[in-house]
Amino acid sequence: MSRDGDSEVITLGHGSGGRLTNDLIRQVFLPHLSNPSLDVLGDAAWLPRVEGRLAMTTDGFVVSPREFPGGDIGCLAIYGTVNDLAVGGAVPLALSAAFVLEEGLSIAELRRVAASMGAAALRCDVEVVTGDTKVVERGHGDGLYIVTAGVGRLRSEPPTGPSTVCLGDEVVVSGPVGDHGAIIAALRNGLDPGALTSDCGPVLPLVDALYGAGIRPRFLRDPTRGGLATVLAEFAKEAGVTVELREADVPVRDEVRAVCDLLGLDPLFLACEGRVVAVVPGGQGDAAVAAFAVLPEGRGAAVAGRIVPREAGPVALATRYGGRRLYDTPTSEPLPRIC
Image 1 (spheres, rainbow, N blue to C red):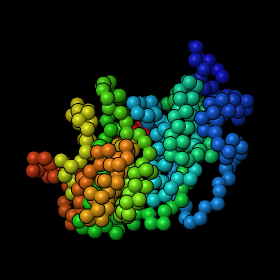
Image 2 (image 1 turned 90 degrees about the vertical axis):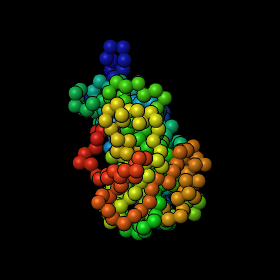
Image 3 (image 1 turned 120 degrees about the vertical axis):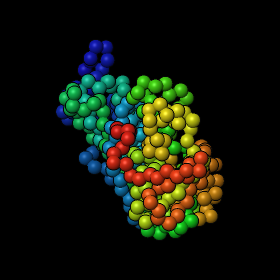
Image 4 (image 1 turned 135 degrees about the vertical axis):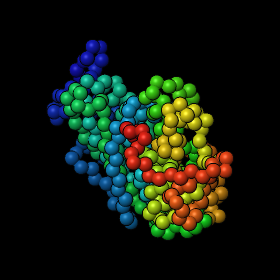
């Protein structure tokens, strides 16, 4: 390992495929991600036979800052990939991870990221079965990027989709929205986040809880980039309806509101990294909240709105003061590099 001052750092040699690459894999990644499939260090992992259909997802992670209260780029990469499979109606089976490292990156930080990934994978009961590392010159990579892919077994009754929505269906959120976006925004702007932390975590237990309660959702999504409003606007456009939200019923922490007030942001457009938004048949919203609320990940769950005939906008928010605010898909993410 090369040193920069008193710290071990990544060099271009770590991406050469030689001894330095081998040392990086065996000394940094394998101690935290080891499993029979990965330990072979082959060019491809062999997966067990699976009955039924498969689901697959891929994602890239470029969050800045890379470490934040409640998580880091490592656990975010695991949870983000597992969550995409979960809301897609699949039970995760295996993940892959590719790392783009910048020359000069602290190896101590990389070890922390690998440990965080290993702990997150263990929590999700899934393995990183194959991976890759590449190194780019100093100034060309902003430290560390991670690219993942995931494979899962599709449930027998996955979400039926926007085309099956009915008027009167209810919109349920599994907990307070905007936590992740608010903490990243606070750190970038030099604000003290206080006790606020990212909601970065797995949503698979929440989805399992819905199905365990006998609820078959029309639509599931984890509201990451663009937040709750963007996810629901996209859904409503595809379904040809309006989602009517009640501001008093959308759970938002006071700390998130404070950050938004200071920076001119809207909590409904801020990313979550451990929440589910579900559209469930009318009359099943309270049961969905009850299913979520028994889990630590589901504290603060609420029925936030319902499906109504198409109006002027895809999302209409009934404010606390009797007004009505319309939301649509934003032109761009209000807070880039959020995940």
